[in-house]
Image (cartoon, rainbow, N blue to C red; front, side, top):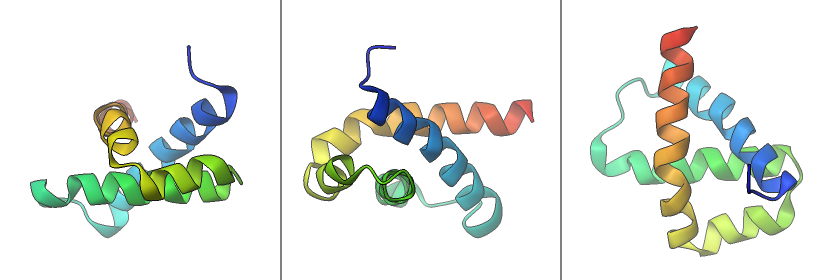
Length: 83
């Protein structure tokens, strides 16, 4: 609720992207590649939402991605279980 609307939109879109990635591309990614997968999904979501500032920050700021990583993965898993 406290996120900027553009960031919230990218996060919501990343749920769709990571769900698609894990269902159709990489069902059981190795633990060491989860950060890379999350970064890829966030970047793809930012690109699809045309959120260029967020996209650039995802490319350059590992802490930013790390802070979003658990949220994106956990909510995506919940969405798959509920579906």
